[in-house]
Picture 1 (tube, rainbow, N blue to C red):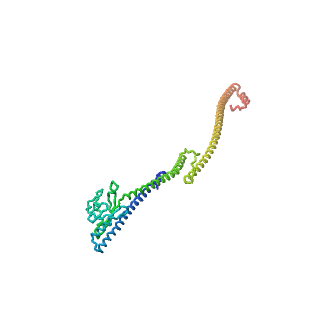
Picture 2 (picture 1 turned 45 degrees about the vertical axis):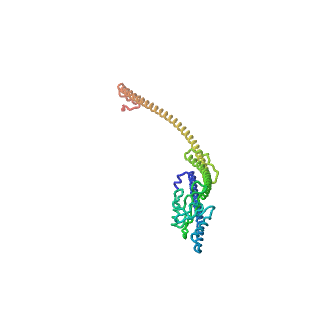
Picture 3 (picture 1 turned 30 degrees about the horizontal axis):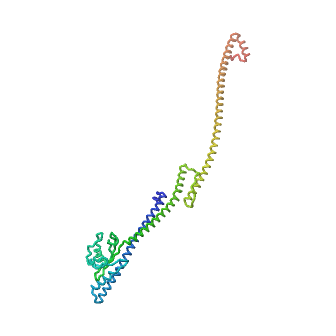
Length: 363
């Protein structure tokens, strides 16, 4: 599950197509293999039935041999002549040979009659008569495949023979069929199957392509829009397309609603910011006026302080001058008192002091 989450959705959809095509090819291959197997089995069953039915001729003449004065040689000769003229499936024939691989009867190639076929090989060097003897000895009957010349063909054609033992006479009855007609029929089925698989593959590819186109672009737009919002570079006036009834349409509707709410929030924030800006400007103006007023008051206080300092300095100067004047007056009075003492005597001093409102003893 986590591994699939690491694969983009588009690739996952194409992965569905790949898996479907692989399963389609596997199913078609299995059907073709079974079809060829069925064709082969049917053909083998056909020649087996033909051999088993033809063995009834041997049994008939063998019964005549046992029931009448017919000799074995006569019974066998009559049986060979009957089998020589038998045909099935058009031109297919039977052959008879011994367990020692001596050809007793071949209606198509009479030159082989009486010959030992032990060393007879097919085009691949396969000793098929030896293999027939082995099958007969081990199982009593069976099939042997080899390649043999067929009229109208330059190259040897694959052939399958079915052989069975007629124990009373020790004869091996066999017949073979060429497999080219089966292969031709199989090739026809193969071409039909391939055409059907190609058609199904094209339909699957077109369907997956339509599904990818219906999912990938809207999903990519939604992801890009969300990424732009996350990065702060989105145009909130843009809207995602809404034109369906699937989950992506629901996602687009929800996204558009979210963007609309976000626009409202941002508009409210801008309005609040404008109010705050206006308040800040007013506060700045009030603060500037207050600073200006405080500056003026500060200047006035500095002026008052300067004036106070100047007045203080003046008072100090006046105090100093008054003190000096007082000192000079006291000095003058003392000098005057000394002069009066020396000039008028004590009465004069007493009278002088009385006139000055002072007691003569105070000096």
